[in-house]
Image 1 (cartoon, rainbow, N blue to C red):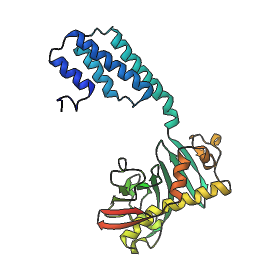
Image 2 (cartoon, one colour):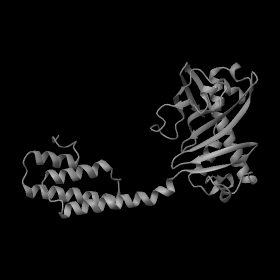
Image 3 (cartoon, helix red, strand yellow):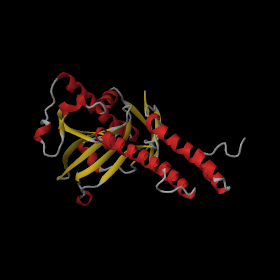
Length: 284
């Protein structure tokens, strides 16, 4: 195998420069490098920022003038990429929905590849009032990424405003989106405030507890998608909210959120405890 077989064109160019390649050869390599980047602007794959930095460094090390055509074309490439990002960014920005459906007030946050469902629960324990927000994040295939609890009003006041990840799928940004079985990390000591969701929850086996916590989100999305199809959810119109939160009725027009919600609504999972900090989560 040629010693340069596993190196990128830019790495080869830099190696050649270190070997005192003639200026004519440097120009040939620079032309190929820039033309390759220009082609990728239109046809892909996407150009990473560090590639532009490396190309600029190569031109400097090869003693090209900052006013040369190579530097000008590299600047044009960077401007095109930045313009494209600016055009795409609004479409990929987060959108926030809220309203009542199936007897619960729900918040849906939609991002470019996931949604987060949040619902609040409150209650009284030992004469103390408490309130928590439970959030479920679902990926593009409707699988759970994590279940999170926020203490809105904790039974232990020092925890007010704190977050706890109850369950987090291992390496969820990296695993394939339509996974069927995977490991998840779980909180070893669960908050007492979970009794606001179900008063007998701590009498259940831990495996069932974690499966139930995940499936709450799936069932709520099932109720939500059904209600969106059959009747108008009870929520305020977008223009009536200063916060910019949209009503749930606007969700069907969200081409990111709705496919995820519909997939998640059809799923239910199981969980098998591995040890005090790990479960295996599975979808049929």
